Image 1 (cartoon, one colour):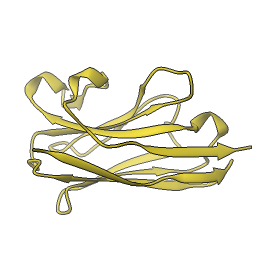
Image 2: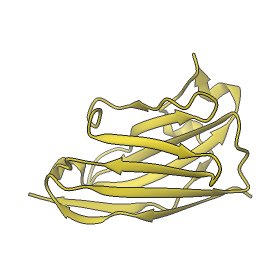
Image 3: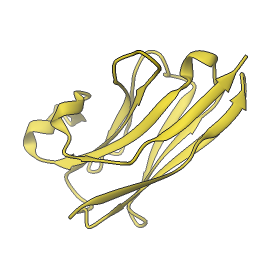
Image 4: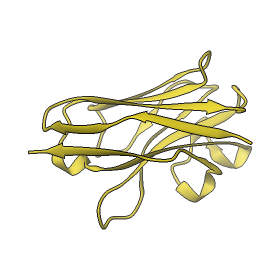
Amino acid sequence: QVQLLQSGGGSVQAGGSLRLSCAASRLTTSGVCMAWFRQGPGKERKAVGTIYSDRGSPVYSEAVNGRFTISLDIAKNTLYLQMDDLKPEDTAMYYCAADTGEHLVVSAICVSHGPEYTYWGQGTQVTVSS
């Protein structure tokens, strides 16, 4: 059974930084799509960004592009989300997700549709105060 264990997060003032980690166990290291999603209070879950293990170049949502950085340490099987220049609107529960399969990859880019992912982390709260 694949497991994703998240760590990091917390509270920070606007302009600050946080880093989230997502350690995967029993997950293959090739042909894997991994993603970060977030869900703010009263809002629907949305993708923050995705990364394909075989390509290595992350893709970001417009809301975080230029401020957030996704990276994947294949040796440690761990996904990271470095969040810089945080804004109050970044306040949300953040989730990592992972899965394998051709249905997840389009032109070497992983899809950002949450229901396509089978494995999810437990979630971690990020709160940004103004």
